[in-house]
Length: 379
Image (cartoon, rainbow, N blue to C red; front, side, top):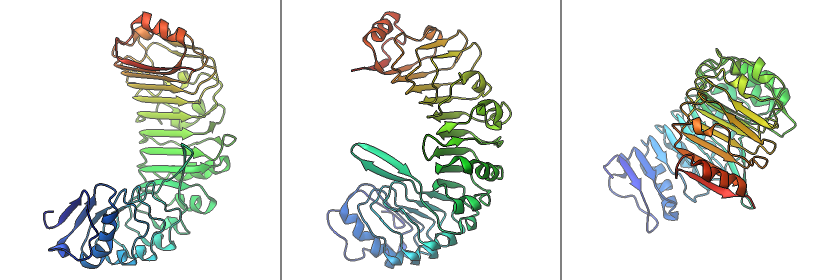
């Protein structure tokens, strides 16, 4: 502790009385999940009124005291991974709050006053529910008045609903946006809203189920990261401005999950010459993929997973000349090492999961990557 900044690693017992200089504290950060740390918050709220940063990630506390609203200078409130189930109504008094981090907390619903935090720039509120070794992610529902939060730059993640989407167009300062449970009928409205977000650099859309078709007809020239989880409309890679050379000129990371594409998408995506990361997970139903000479010159990481029909992968000389990592996971029909893999000279890391014995034998004979590859065998 240096008078204004306190970092707690672990407390051996509850704190019941204020300690010296507590009123001078401006920043408190907890590192660990000590239950005793939970008793500190009520004291801070009553004795450290000038607090600006309160980072309480991972604590098992379930309740935030109403007195949190008295911290009128608070700019950052971090409750990531905590057990907090509800925010008090007094949260609306934090008029200087810039960042509210509730990622993987137990908060599913906001008090209506959340929309009064007009200075709020960054809101992280992804809900993670663990069941029998698996987990599901959801966004949060924001009460009427989302359009009041016009300074928002980060919103992760919002449940796509009529009311919230109606006001999405007003969030014109957005840099990073994640939407969950998107339905096909919402795509037109979402596209219209995205068109007003000229600073948007990261976009993550997740369909509500595999029957919903995603189609975004919008140009986002400053977009750098795009992740689409859900079925894509036929022809979208050739028709949407997102995937054109001009519209995708700054795109460096592209993830397509469960897209159900029937045609080889690589020719269309080869226009995106600045890609450094490309992921296909359950995105393609075809049997062959071919990377041709000159395609993806800056690509460093390629991930192909969950493509049960893919039996042949071809890499021509001069394709992916900068590739450093290749990951092939759960490609049940692929029994042979990708043709042309020896052309990937900068390759430093190979990862193969659920491969066959024959695939492994051929991989060893090829001596690709030396000792820098890992694998698991199919049962």
